[in-house]
Length: 292
Image (cartoon, rainbow, N blue to C red; front, side):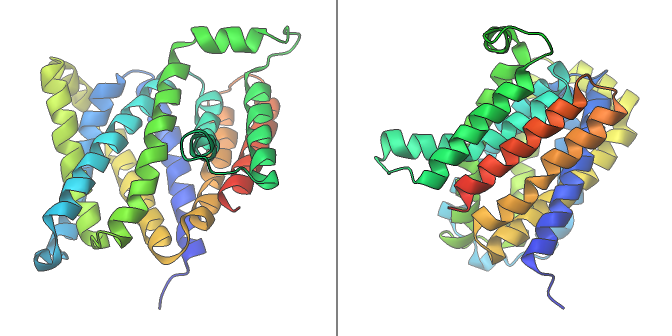
């Protein structure tokens, strides 16, 4: 029995939200880099079955090279998100990631001279409104959210992650379709590349001691996160291999809403109802753009 793509996207959304909430709990006491190294190693161990199911005879060097380059971008994006989650409330950091489709549309307009449709312009407008509402606090001056966004350390990392995700999300589909890298090989080699990349970063940054300390203190939670991560990445890739990326991403956006509601409630974050409304506006804006 074949699982429908929309069911896979929904499963991906649920486990992605669960991972984000658990990540925030761990990042209260661990550094983003130490956490990323350990979760990458756990993910590699969990990904071993994918290597066993891979037909290596059909792999091409060009496909693996592009996958490696994509893994660098996705790995750096993941690290940036972890820094953002560590420095910002989860109900403030995650909704900003919904801006990715808007950036892609704007970049295509500026650099590729692609015209923006009415729906895309409306979507971009909703993204701007949602982002502003997300940053606004009660009795605050109109310009204050902009000033605070410029000063907040976590926002820079989220913006960097947005740019990196915009590129890597396009490469995902290309690797699976154009370069015809099988899904099992994609999952196996991507997590091998992630582990290599993060270990090298930790070595060159002289953070191996903090990695060992984080492993000793939080390995149980990080193992759970690694399991969640493997599940949401696999189900998402399965979904986009079966359906248009836009449709799969539309359902996966639910993960942000779930994480904001559950995570914001769990961690008792301020102004949660307003942030939930802002998140809904952002998701609607993103769906208008990616489904156009």
